[in-house]
Image 1: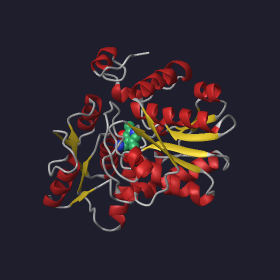
Image 2: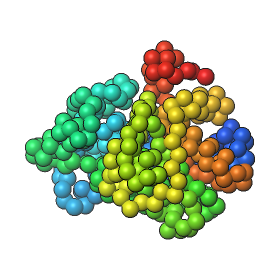
Image 3: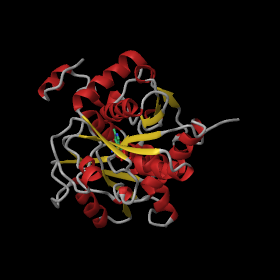
Image 4: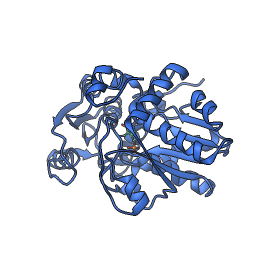
Length: 324
Ligand code: PMP
C-alpha cells in the first residue's frame, strides 16, 4: 500500500516538469520543480513543516499552542494547514499589499489574520518585526521567523535539493531561483554544490529588490518596484548568509508577465508571478550558456492566487503592464 498519513506526509516529492516552450526556444532543458503541487499549493509548505517540527522537537511548541508568523501569504497558508492538521492555532500578520486571494484563503483555513500597512523592514511596525513581538507577548506561542530561522533552508537542503539531484540523475548545469526568505534558493544551492561544485547557483531578482546589486557589488541598492509577490528583499537574511551566488539576473515585470502567459497558453501551466521571474532568469541564463545545458528552477505557486491581478488586464494596465 502507498498511503500518505494526512496533510503533512503529502508535502514534497513534487514532479520536475520540462518547460517545453522555453526549452525548445533556447535549446536548453529548462526544468521546473512543481512546488505548486504541494498540498497547501506552494513551495512554502516545506519550510512551514520543517519550522513547526523543529519547534516541536525543541519542546518550544506544545499541544494547543499558537504559531505566529509574518508572511506574504504562502508560508501562512502552509502553516495554517499544518496547524489544522496538528491541532495548533495560527496567527498571521500580512502586509495589505498582498493579493486578496491569499488573505481570503488564510481566513477560510481558520487562521487569525491581521492585515497591516506595508512599511520597510527598518520600521518597527514592519509585518515581520510585528509578528515577532506578537508571538513574544502570547502564552504558549512560537514565532516561525521564516526569514532568519534556518529550519527554513534546511527543509530545502533535506528534501528539495535531493529530489532535484535524483530526478535529474545529477545531470544539471545550473540552479536558478528568486528569493523571498532565500530558504529555497539557499537550501537547494548548498545541497547541489556539495554534490557537484560545478553546478552554478544563479539568483533571479525582480526590480525593487536589493539582492541583485548585493550579488554584483556587495551592497544593497533598491531600484524600481515589482508586481510580483513573495520575492525580493532589502536585506540579506540568515537563510542567505554565506550562500554562493555565481550569477545574478534581474528580470522586468513585463518579461515575467509575458512568460506567465506563455506558460499558460503553450505549456498548460497556470503559474504565479514569481514563476515568471524565475523562468525569465532561466531563459536569460540559457541564452548566455548556449544550447545543451540543463537548468532547473522553481514553479513556486499557482496563478489562481493572483487571478484578480496578474490575470486581470485592467489591473495590469494600472501598473503600466500589458497583457500579451
Ligand atoms: N514565490 C512565492 C510566490 C513565494 O510566496 C515565495 C515565498 N515568500 C517565494 C517565491 C520565495 O521562496 P523563499 O522564501 O524560499 O525564498
